[in-house]
Amino acid sequence: MAAALGLIANSGLCQTATLQSFISATPTDTIQLGINMDNSLEFSGKGLAIDLGQYGEWIASAAVSAIGVSQTNTTSGYPSTTADLSNAQLILQKNTGVAQFYFKAGSYSFPTLGTAYKRANFYTADTYGYVPQVYAAYVPNSNWSAMIGKLQAMGGYESGFTYQNLNIARGILWAQTNVITRGIQVNHTQDKIDLAFTLNDGAYSGKYNWLGASASYRPNLNHYLGISYVGSFSPNNTNTFNTPLLENNSQIANVVYKFSSDHWQVVPYLQYSLIPANPSIGIPVSYTTRGGAILVNYKMRPTEMGAAKLKNISLPVRVEYLSTNGGNVAGAPILLYGPNSSAWTFTITPTYQFEQYFMRLEASLVKAINATAGASFGANGTNTSQVRAMVEVGILY
Image (tube, rainbow, N blue to C red; front, top):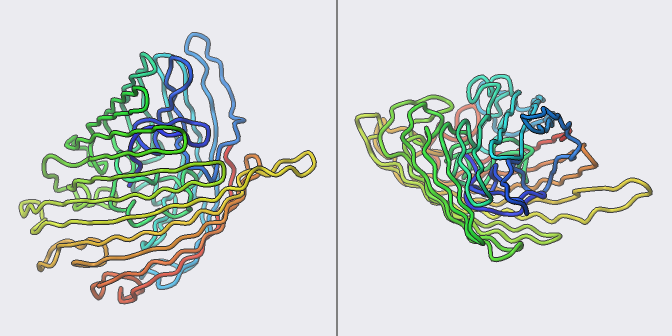
């Protein structure tokens, strides 16, 4: 459930290795670590600079937000309306020099379309813990970097943490990919082409049996095209909330195009995944998924109001479609909403930010197609649609 592919300008950062990634090229001879963000929200730039002498300058920043969720056809055992602290994080990073570091600590939730909302305290404990990201990077020059630690996964477009994305909730394509993974990644930038290679533990399984690569081409600041592949090269029978059996044994490919201008951002992308049959670990038949999404954001220019400046007034929209094939064997694990099921989603998220403060509203619809009774929405899993309203307010300091 993660981000993918190459190098692109985004919220002041030119990001390498993945579309929403964590390395950013600079005009100098270094590559800098950065907070991966899409373009509807941005950090205030007021982070605290800490000079540690021979250990360099470190920057401390924070992300704090509260969320409200109300939805129809809720999963049994979950309330239809809830409020929560969706992010409470401290971020510490060293962005210069040959040795660079990134550290994020705190709690979080990853609201996702089509699934019940899991509160931040439970989500944090059941996924990546109170230090969800920490890694070191060796950056000898502007062309090469190598990273090791808890990294944002390669594959897909959207990131995990709510404030990193155009929409509050993640989409159904994101739910087929990984989010955070432990491993290593090597990145190379040459002119307009960017390459990345990774060895990691897939869906945070603890078994280092995933390989991945991405390549991207950016002819100018307005256009970007990237491809990526990542997947398991050996079976793994781990099956938990954070490491689902099917997704952890999958192969994932993405093609992403991105257009950016002063007002517009348009991101269509395609995603394909294959889960090979392996009865020895509980996968009796193979599965495939085919999906596509388009994310569009219209962003107003900053507006002067006396001495104040309004920033980041924007209107993000996301439309997705995902189809699955396979699983129609007795006892086979369920993917999406049952064997050969599919779904489409629509999300709109009006967003307002003033300096470090932001507020956004969201309305979304998920429609399941060819769903199996008991595997979709509502107390009995028999409803085929879900409508959700959300609000998020917070500080990006």
